[in-house]
Length: 138
Image 1 (cartoon, helix red, strand yellow):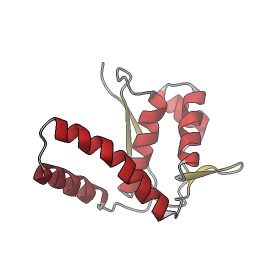
Image 2: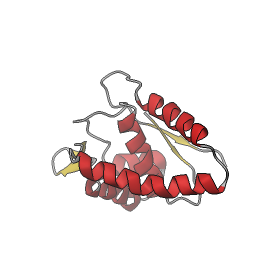
Image 3: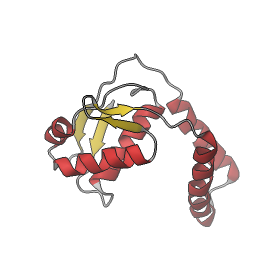
Image 4: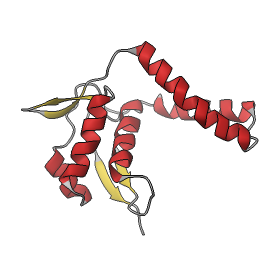
């Protein structure tokens, strides 16, 4: 999995990291049971504060994507509560779709975008968890 952090972005670094890990899980680059890099290792690889990585991991834990184990660290452990996940997705999509409607994005275009993104996440790679760090050029 390739993690790209854009230090020029308005989006907080911990949220970029969180989002990249979620996308890695969705594309199966990161799988259930995989151990994420330690806070210290990932912070050093990216060149950010350990508290930033810790915050991203804490958010992922709160959202049901990882568990924190004292011996193993952050382990991908997906929350099986599908009803809650669907409700959260519906809430987030309402806002995203409203923005699209305001910009005259058609229903067909929305469906095309959703199918395209869903297909990207359906791709399966090998079983290993590989995280590669890449800085986005200034």
